[in-house]
Length: 210
Image (cartoon, rainbow, N blue to C red; front, side):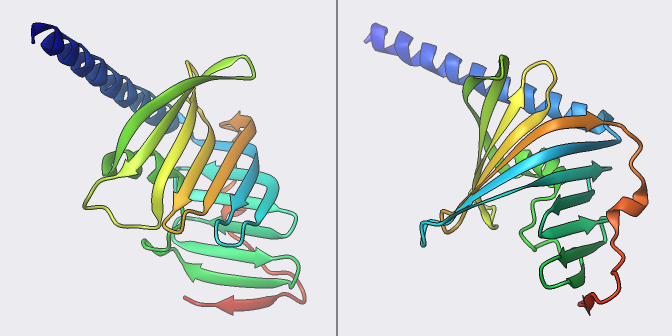
C-alpha cells in the first residue's frame, strides 16, 4: 500500500511540475510579445476539412502591430485590420468587403492567442521537439467547461530561449484543422499604421457592411 502511495505522490509531483513549466513558458511568451512593437513574417497555412477530405495550402506574408493590428497577404487575398475595422479584399473578383471587427467572429486575433486563450483554456505541455536544430515546446490548449467558441482545441509551438511562436494548429468544432507555420520573422521594423487599412483601386467593388 505504501508503494502505491509513493508512486501516486511521485506522479502528482511530476504533474504539478509540468503544470508549472507550461505556465512559465506561456508567461515568457506573453512577456516577449509585450515587448514587441511590430513584427513581419512569412507564413504557410494548411487547412484540412474533415467532411470533404480536402486540403488547401496558402502562403504569404503576415504583419502584426500592437497585438490587435494585423495584415495577411497572399496571392489571392488581403485581410487587414486596425483593431476596429477589417478590410477583406479578394484579388480574383476584385471585391473589397469592409466590416467592423466583431468579438464573436471566430477570428483568431494575435493578442487573443497570447492573453485570452491561456486564461480560458487548460494548458498542457505535450512534448518538446527539435525544429531546425532548436528546442521547441509543444503546448496544447483545451477549453474550460464554461468556454464556448469556434476553437475546439489549439496547439502552439514555442521556441526555447527566444520564446517566439513559430507554429499554430487549431481544430474547430467540426474537427477541421488549420496549421499556421511562421518563418523569416523580423521584429520592430517600424511598420506604418497605414499598412493596417486598405484603399480600393479603380474597378474594385466595395461592399461596406458597417
